[in-house]
Image (cartoon, rainbow, N blue to C red):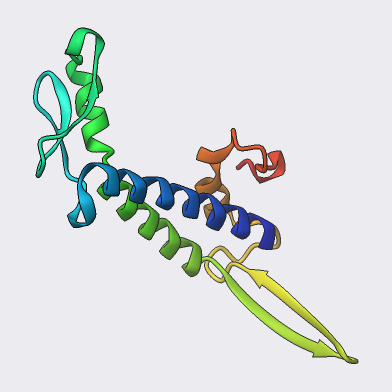
Length: 137
């Protein structure tokens, strides 16, 4: 389970870095609220265009989707996922005959293998080269 937790934490860190870079580039430190204005996606504060479609027109379904998944939302989702990981991960260290052993388990799911909840959190990253098929729910 340790490797799955490490994998998840690394992916969330990458996602956070990407979202923060987008915030810094487009909105500055104050936030990253995006909106779709019937032609393109723009930042709310600075009116900076984030995404345009062909010939500077974006289909509504695409524009609404992009605006809904702005960096601020991504950061909130990362925070929620990190809290889920913490709730589903407990590490205990024991010592026996001079050897230290650490075991990580899920106190919520109480299963012998990988936590089903953490497996589900990892599924969106199934295309990542470090993802293991045995983690698939």
